[in-house]
Image (cartoon, rainbow, N blue to C red; front, side):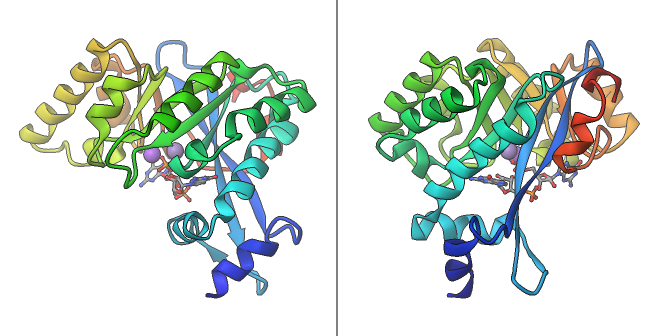
Length: 249
Ligand code: G
Ligand code: G
Ligand code: MN
Ligand code: NA
């Protein structure tokens, strides 16, 4: 279809870009990281949401080239600035399963001179019902480079718990639905149970979708490590974060 065709020319035609959303350390108050989010423009200027084009890119295989482009772009347009401590980039399980992915990340880090520890890759369980040994090997290779591995959208898929058993994630991002559904007492218990589960396994916890000061207070009470959401900041182009040291933003 027409998006599949668009994805083939998207990089050359500069139809894809990255925006970055800040991540705040709850204790220090500093912006310790930003998440890179891909944007796609059609030829007429209208934009296609990732929820629409990422699944198509995964189906056609275009995700492999787009994924390498995203990591290289995050390194060259943002991580070259020492003010930005860490950038996280979303990766699809298809990338982790593809031969040579870890080597391509090593090559990008080498070319750009960015230390591996400043790159985080967010992996989503997605539709993957089982953990392939290829994925585990790839993640181990990435960890050898110093790259951080985060689990994204925790609590929304089928396989989250088994992934947690198999992989030593640096940080687990708890899906925003748990925060947004926690107005009633049942929802709060559920959120606290999930926080306990993740914390007892020794992972740092990031809660997504923090939109209000009340939610921020709850995050402090729950001793959450990192927050992300409209209350901290909306996704914005790279130059927004390059103007000032991030701690002051
Ligand atoms: O910011 P936004 O609503 O547009 O992002 C929606 C979802 O699209 C994100 O949760 C993320 O999982 C996915 N996404 C955004 N950028 C990328 C990317 O570069 N690669 C992959 N695989 N997924 C992405
Ligand atoms: O990778 P991930 O699925 O986490 O993608 C983040 C998505 O969540 C982006 O599409 C972004 O626009 C969206 N988002 C970020 N902060 C908030 C927020 O505070 N509230 C809501 N509803 N969505 C958010
Ligand atoms: Mn993400
Ligand atoms: Na997420």
